[in-house]
Image (tube, rainbow, N blue to C red):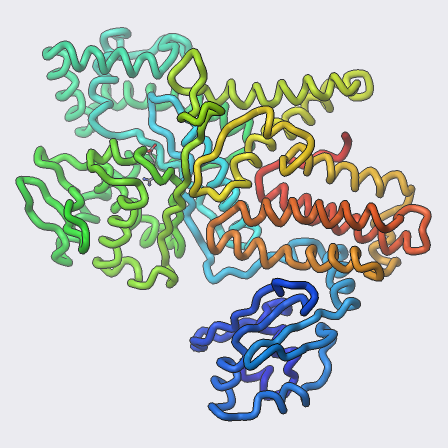
Length: 593
Ligand code: ARG
């Protein structure tokens, strides 16, 4: 901040604050530069709303700000600045500079536009279904949102530990194992099909548990044997986990999502140690025979050791938090779960998930594991999201079963896309493989985008008709828009790689400039979407980009015009940025339609 100011280049100073040339405000500075895009493009591209605050920080109060501003030499980036009342500065970026920055990106790669984040390693805890239960639409949302956040962080050069915190531990395994022994006395499940539907198996064992006291007692003893590490029980447990895992894999494989499983069981051996640390800090108290942590402002404590001496969801999660901070050295831990009741039941506390995570984080702060301020690192964040609703406005279900089978849901999206492609005559034009790959990209992409484009905290309505519409704000529309740009470039017959090096990008027409400026804002948006954990910002950016492109393409002739080279480069830059957006959203781009 000081450096740029003392050279007197007010333009550089401002733009530096804008982060466009990656000059960052030193940490000691407690003044927010308050740089934002101009609300009204008539006044400029960006505005600084706090120039006085910044100036007084550097020069001391009462210094003439206006004089310095007028003296400042020109900056390559800035076309003009204007003062709009005390402390407000509007900046118009220079057109050649915008063009040059875009062309540089085309040559050096979009990675050069990656945001710089203040963390090196992060944990994203997402998907996290529960063994022997069907993975439901809530887990689908978590998988889609978590994957995008992980991708944005990875793009920003953060090492991401993608954690699947599966529910693979707890008292329910007693009844599952006992029931398995009843069905398969050898303790060996014949093959993957032998159990059939694991959800039905779960329900049947629960029914035995609830209705037969002798079975119930055996199940309770089975938990003890499992926890004591008895080989026969461990083996039965791992077979059940393995069957579930194969089911999840089918979903992950379709979605192209990669996760590393570290389930609840993984943290079990670390629980006593972590609780001891909390206890040494005086955080753990005795209450009605249980061991609990009281959290300020909450009237129910967090139970960490149950009355029977057993551990629960909270003991596991606190331990996982400790492990991630201390063993894995993560500076940011992000939990992606719904805001509602899901985690509640497992904790047998009447708390919403965000409240529950709030309590974990509070406990960790009191223990000194996390700083007191929420915006300081190491940091823990709960990324909550709303429900998936059916078109009837109720919780999303299919007619036949209680839960929706995610594999069937994804396959339906793909099959509908395939049918639409066949209807458009692609079956004769394309190979079967092309047809299949395109249907997958568009179908799965549509499901993801329909979820991600909403502010995650709200509920959203699942509708195939809406998400597969090729008009409006859908993945189908956007993927086609991208393919169309690729075909413009292809049909021009020009070697775009060659043009990147030899041609010059210019932004003469106002619609070209608008598109160019929007392209340039890509890095800012990714940074905002991932620091605030809102992927919908990136969707909004992508949709607006395609609109800006359409306006440009409608008003500016590309192929055969005098500006052909420059305009082809602008097409290419749009396609590159769109592809990066798709990639960050976990959507596979298509090149032909
Ligand atoms: N398995 C949990 C559920 O389905 C979600 C786990 C989320 N992660 C965590 N560390 N608690 O409700």
